[in-house]
Amino acid sequence: MIAPADIEACRAAIRTGSLSFHAASRLLPSKVRDPALALYAFCRLADDAVDEHSDKAAAVLRLRDRLDRVYQGRPVEAAADRAFADVVETFEMPRALPDALLEGMAWDAVGRRYDDLPGVLAYSARVAAAVGTMMCVLMRVRDADALARACDLGLAMQLTNIARDVGEDARAGRIYLPLDWLREAGVKPEAFLADPRPDAPIRRATARLLAKANELYVRSEAGVAALPFACRPGIMAARLIYAGIGGAVARAGHDGVTARAHTTKGQKLGWLMLASLKAGATRVMPQPATLHAPPEPEVAFLVQAAARTAPQRARSEALLSVLAQLEARDRGLSA
Image (tube, rainbow, N blue to C red; front, side, top):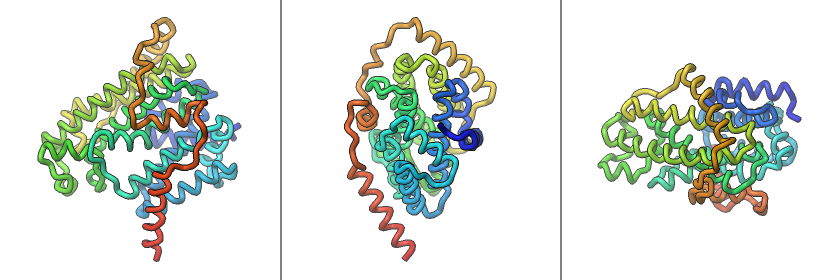
């Protein structure tokens, strides 16, 4: 059982760090909500620790060590780590899932950019779809079709985040839009990073990214009916709230550069109410055929890791390789 004080600390971290998830989590049953808060708090604080640290290589390596301690059953003395360790033990969380998140953060630390949409999806699989897969584990859902749809939702959310944060990322020296889309439009990435403006090619790329996100949001709904009924409103709420953020970007003319799109408390309340209605309808609606659509290729490894029939594997060669790069960089900086 997660200690009440640790859960309250996780709740406070989510309340200030992820308003959209905090709103959606209110519709989850307590037996899922508390572990979900622990999961999101660990992921949110880990992301902040890397994102806000000037020495990102060292920050990712510290996160690797924290994950090692979590899986050894001796977490560091921090509420989020202790709570996540309880989640890992209680739900038998496959190590490959938080390792995928770690790999995504390592990609950020080495400044990786993505030549095409599959590359962006591969990154999104690690930093977002992995969390969606872990949420399924918390709901005791290990069906491959349901896991694939959870990954759709995670991918859609991350593409929405990228579209919303184009300018914020550019001012921090980061770019997540597919580089081939920019090259096709005659945009040089370095020139855009030096002077980010919402020119027509950037708006078009943002619109294309949101179109893919919307396709994934629609397909993800098929998986909601495969979840325990009490969990459906919360997941539907997350889908509607994040899609609403994409809608705000679209209404701003797909300008994710000059202002960061946001939604109002009233809008969130409306989506929470709609989520309850749509989730209720899943009791009587037939299962859509899209439930059985194959997963996006970039998330197949997550589905395989979470499915009960999947053997547990050691850390992937790709993850070990990028961690070795960071260790070399960290040694060079500290020399």
